[in-house]
Length: 68
Ligand SMILES: [Zn+2]
Image 1 (tube, rainbow, N blue to C red):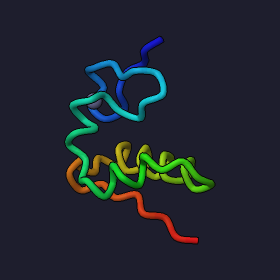
Image 2 (cartoon, rainbow, N blue to C red):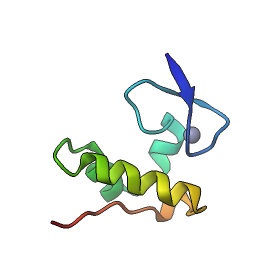
Image 3 (cartoon, helix red, strand yellow):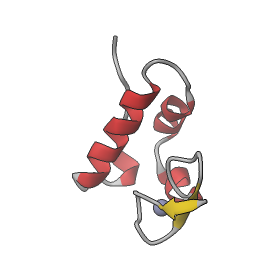
C-alpha cells in the first residue's frame, strides 16, 4: 500500500517510510539519523516532522531533535 508523501505531496511513499526517497534524501543527515531511531520518542519526532512540513519549513531546515 502506498500513500502520498507528506513532504512533496506529489510522489508516493512506501509503507513504513516517513517520506518518499527524494524528500528523505533532502533532509539534513542529523534529522535522518534521529528519524531512523526507534525508541519512545520516535512518534514525537514523526509528529514534529509533520508539524514542520505543514508549517512550510523547507526539508533542508527540518530538525527533529527531542529532549527528555
Ligand atoms: Zn516526497
